[in-house]
Length: 367
Image 1 (spheres, rainbow, N blue to C red):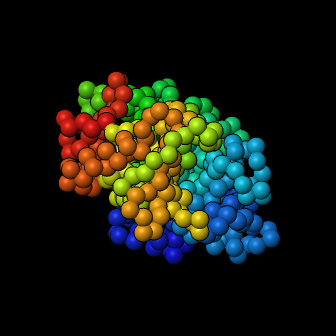
Image 2 (cartoon, rainbow, N blue to C red; image 1 turned 90 degrees about the vertical axis):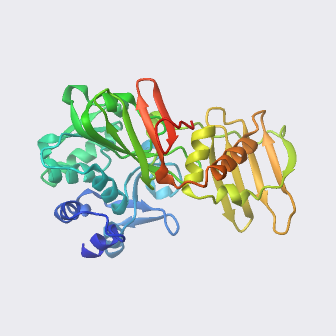
Image 3 (cartoon, one colour; image 1 turned 180 degrees about the vertical axis):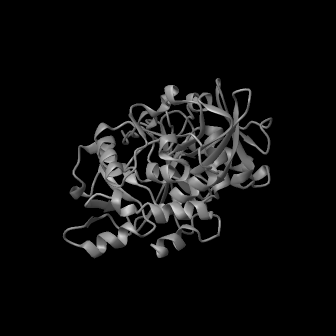
């Protein structure tokens, strides 16, 4: 346990109350007998056949996948989309720390998962003050069993987290454990003035980001991006899979090394995502380096740009009419022109009209 506690806090940012909660709520009570660990390669942990390996994984700083393809694929296949997990303890601790929880705070959790975070919240603010929502009925049922066995009884709801829990509002804090692209205004509406919402903002252009919002008396929330967080996207906000090549694409070249965009700092990733709404992925393996840039809403429009050592120009393959590679490049150089601002200089405003990303102040909207 102490090894896990040490791994939570390499930079000394996690407070004593959060560390005490992790000590008081053993993670092993919320991990299934068989789970999937993705690194260094996907493999199963099995409490019955390899108890030492199972315990080592549970008390290491790693996420443990508990569901594939919304439950339609057995974990033992090791193949499928990861759709529920026990998050890495360091990420859990970081989000809890950013909530600045006090005993008696009323907390709304979006995404019960295994129930571990709901138990941690119960320890920190009192279980009568915790409302946790889970969209997947099977996941919610197992979480309820885990929580009951561990002696915790927060208020559990099976339903759509985007709607919040209006009958339990107002909340002092909203804790989100799934990736979000568009922040539902219901969360702001159900949070009292001065309340805090912490969530993983996951536009999926390069790295993803923690967002910490504070709700103002006028019902608008402002906040900044203080660090990294990446979670599985909320089910209602998942993006469609991108289309395979149908052979109709256009070929050209670019003078911009794709690694300039694909390996850019988090501030650039955030700016490009906000300006363009695009997503991007890197393939970097024995076959070489390739950057894919994809239209979020129309995945039949994408570009693949390949790095070749020693090349003066790099091949671009563009499918569809939208010039997604050019848009990403233009947004990157806008970020450079601004002085290459770090991630924490960016922020977001959430209002009844939607969300806006800004640089330095809410008056400098970029997307």
